[in-house]
Each structure stands twice: as structure tokens, then as C-alpha cells.
Image (cartoon, rainbow, N blue to C red; front, side, top):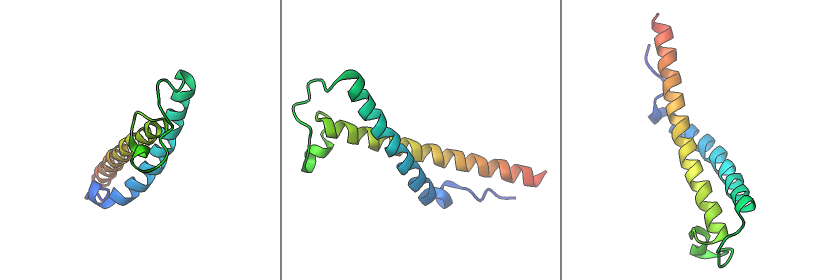
Amino acid sequence: MVNNLTPGKTFIVSLIGGVTTGMGNGSVFGAALMCALGRGSFDDWGGMGMQNLDPTTFNGFVNWCMIIFGVAFTVIMLIALNRHGELEAAAARS
């Protein structure tokens, strides 16, 4: 049997599941880190436009945490689904 769960076939599902889970966890991580360590030397909260993605602002830092966690969870989902497909294919062969 062939692995039907290749990264090409599961990319959209992995992207949706990985980004929603990862960005949710990233926002909690960023907020918890800020609560634990304090705001530090952030000049402003980083409200509008490109300040939203400036990691030296409070909002930008949390947004970058969310982006990094979202990408990481998407990669984890792609690897997990591919390995699961390989195990299913190997079990069907035996």
C-alpha cells in the first residue's frame, strides 16, 4: 500500500490545524512571558500598521510569538501525518 498522507496531500489540513493551535499557544506564551518578566523596556504597545510586527513593541513581540508557534506547529503536523501514513502503509503491506 502507498502512503496517502504525504505532505502535499495534507498541507491545507496541517496549515489550518497547525496555525490555529500554534498561534493560540503562541499568544498565551507571549502574554505569560510578559506577565512573568514584565514589559521591560518596550516604548509603546505597538498598535497600528507595521508596529504590529515590530518585536521591540509589546504587541509586536506577542505577534511574533504567534507566528513562530504557528509555523512550528504546522511543520509538526506535516511530519506527524506523514509518519502516520507511513505506518499505515507498512501495516497494510504485512
